[in-house]
Length: 191
Image 1 (cartoon, rainbow, N blue to C red):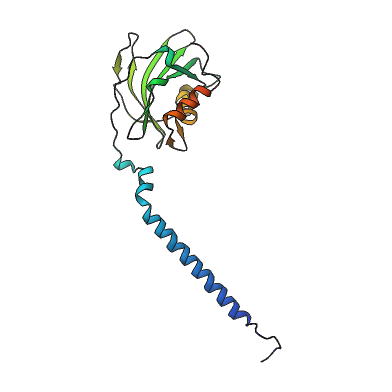
Image 2: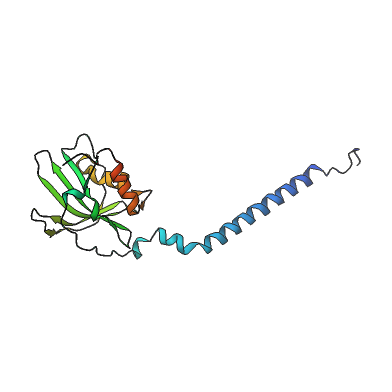
C-alpha cells in the first residue's frame, strides 16, 4: 500500500531500530564499565581495605608533651574541658591510622593526656597510652578500637574525626591536619 510518503519507514520498523540502538548502547556501556572496573580493581581495593585483611602497625612510643606545641580546638559550648593536640605528635601510619597526643584541661586545671589513634575508614579510635605529670607514659590496660561517639561527653573525639583528622572516611595528610588545627579560631587561645 502506497500512502504517498517516499522513503519513510513504517512506525514499527523505526521502533525496532531505536530499540536495537538502545540495547547496543547499554551493552557497550556495560562492557566499558566492566573493563574499567577490572583494570582498576586492585588500587580501588587498596583504598577501601577489607577489614579481614587489615593489620595494625604498632605506633612508635610518644614523646613527652610540650606545651608550646599544643594547639587548641573547639569541642562544644557545653564542655568543661579545653582540648588541644600536640602538633608534633601527629603521624599517619602505613596502616592508615592517624596517631596524636590529646590533652584535655578542666576548668579547675586538671590535665588528662592520652596518646591515641584514629581510623578514619571505620570511624574508630584507640587509646594506647596515658600521660603522667612527670612526662612518662602508662600503657592503656584496655587498648581496643572503639566507635567515635557523637555524645557530648566525648565530643572531642567527634570533633577530631569530623573537623581535623579525617574527610569522607579518609585520613588527611599532615599538612592538611596542621592547617585545620592552626586555622581554627581556638588555636591561639593560651593555656
